[in-house]
Image 1 (cartoon, rainbow, N blue to C red):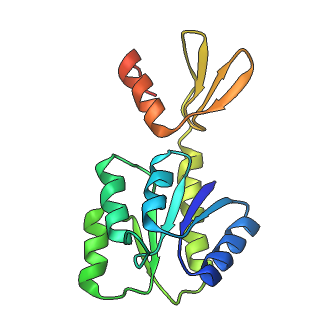
Image 2: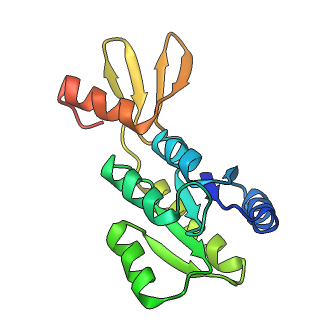
Length: 166
């Protein structure tokens, strides 16, 4: 899986990145909220781990902007913010899970693994439209043998244009 780790503490980011990589995932680390929104909306990630206390834009705003743009990527918060109203607020904004630091590293790994299992069980058959074959599960377009990854928004556009489940 492609996992986006949004964490401004280098030590924590490196630990999480290493653990996820050793668990077989591809990891991208982003250290500030503003940059993270663009990455999250790119459609390249299968899951995101999000800190709440970030420079430039906090995690609550990242959640708000991502969900407002219909980002369906599962977002797990991994933060030191442990006040119940803040936890509930994150869920209200669209967080899929909320983990409070310090956390045993195996717990977020297990939760990312659970997301990977759910994704693996949703296998959609390829669709061919206008000479382009779309592998909808892996979000890849194939034309003349050339494979191109597609962000989620491109798949949504194709769905609208061709009125087909993409």
